[in-house]
Amino acid sequence: MKKFISRRDFLQRSSRVAMITGLSGCGILLKGCSSKKEFDVVIKNGRVFDGLGREAVTADIGICGEKIEKVGKIPAAKGQSVIDAKNLAVCPGFIDAHDHTDVELLVNPKAESSIRQGITTLVSGNCGSSPFPIAGEIYDEYRDNMKESYDIDVSWRDIKGFFAELEEKGMALNYSTFVGQGTIRGVAVGFNDRPPKAEELERMRALVAENIKNGALGLSSGLEYAPGSYAQQNEIVELCRVAAQNGGIYATHMRDESDELLEAMDETIDVSRKAGIRLQISHFKVAYPRNWNKIDAALAKLEEAKKEGIPVYCDRYPYIAGATGLSSMNFPLWAKQGTTDEFLARLKDPTLESKFRAFLVEREKKLGSWDKVVISSVFTEKNRRFEGKTVLEATQETAKDVFVFLRDLLIEEKDRAGQVIFMMTEQNLKRILAHPLVGVGCDGSAIAPYGPLSKGKPHPRNYGTFPRVLGKYIREERILPMSEMLKKMTSVPARNFGFAQRGALKKGYFADIVIFDEDRVIDKATFKNPHQYPEGIRCVIVNGQVVIDQGDHSGLLPGSILRKNM
Ligand SMILES: [Zn+2]
Image (cartoon, rainbow, N blue to C red; front, side):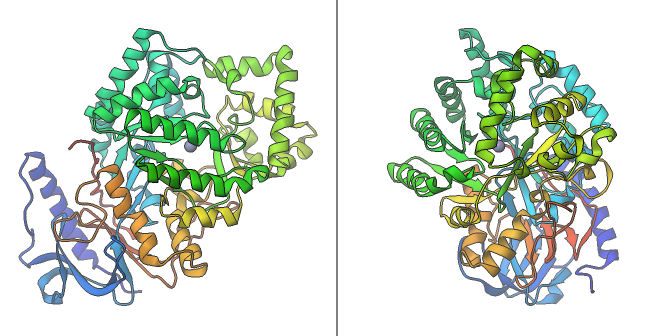
């Protein structure tokens, strides 16, 4: 198949990238085109969706440097490079509203699984966890873990250091991040379930302010995880007040997404009300069969909050399974206090066994069966054979009961194991995705089918989220018009997260652009075989540079860090 852009163009463009980088490093503003033609790139004859919800119109787009210079009629002769987008959709690059990529960009800056979905901006640092600031007491554990897992040297301790590391390596797409409330609590209070002392609360408030001033989008929480969950509502409100004063927003994985979902929504909305902060509810869902009928009440709560004037928005991935660490949800939060070693010591403690067993009995009632839980990743070769198997299968194979199996595995893996949990329903998923207050987030990371990021059987959302929404839910199931869904993937998150001049195809906006085939776009990654790129995403442009051209990654790294307040 014909390439959009010739190799020689890529070579020319690559050398130009080096030059431009040098210039902008000296603080010179880029203006106009770097080629002798009127435009560096012209995208011809595409079905252009502006990202603002309007129906597609046939138009051309002219790009100069990193910006869109013109949308309209442009003769091909005016472009240094010309992309033929006839019969293809052209829209703003997708903004992944909920992502977990961080050190993955240092391992592989090409951001393969994300950029190939059409994602041009990641919103990361979610669920209360960010790779900064790193507390003194866990720095060694974190450093050793990163070295062992990815051969990365952790040189940073704070957001400035992490951003410097990212910028030195470069990245294929734009990156933005929250600072994690769990991470901050770990630094200031430690890892035990107790309220903060006055000076510890002060320290946390100062850390929230400092991180947002240095570019974090706001505060994220993961209130089903230790140690973030040890914070009560008033503590979250205090931190959110500081975040709001600094222009930040609050993204939350709520305290409960199942039996007490509605109560957790009340808590969350009340945080926003008290702190006066914009709210992003993460991976909005109604988990486990016995709660599925709460969907009407849950959506009604969102709509009521909106009516009241609470600035609330949500994100969701297009799958009925979630994914998290294997020890999460299967063991009580009190057991996870302290360090990993302390958690593992509790697992070995015979006096606690009956409590753990009782917890797992309740867990099985929620799930229905242990065939709903798949072991997605382990760390050691020894247990590799369990990857992709359900806990039910693994217990049968090992002739262990669920408690003994999970205990032994977590001890052997030092708690470095993941799970995929089937807990949602297709009907609710469609209603959530179509809802005007819900956008799209992968809840995954930028991984790759090769190298150190290719391990395990991770959730297919890492590769398939955006193409799956477009192919399965828009083209096949028609839950919304294409233009409406694209708006929720582009201009709406750009506005919510404060990304200036992004998320729409307009003159003066950054040229973050996806060209895709509406008839063919679809995810290929499955739970059994997740490391597969999607189909139908033909071209991805980040800040005016072509990163994906007909399935080939150009190797260019034109992404930048999108900092709050800058
Ligand atoms: Zn989460």
